Length: 64
Image (cartoon, rainbow, N blue to C red; front, side, top):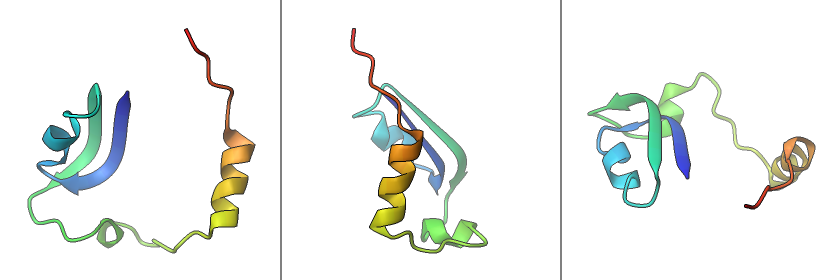
């Protein structure tokens, strides 16, 4: 499993490697308060929007 995050504290990749095969983080910051600090618009998304997006872009899971 690969975990990808746009931004986070510097220790995030090391901590996530305990549960993931690989971790990708675009920006690591020593002084990290909240993800929302790094976005121009970090509006909340309602459940219905999330469900609709997941339905729209989901693909069947291929099992080995």
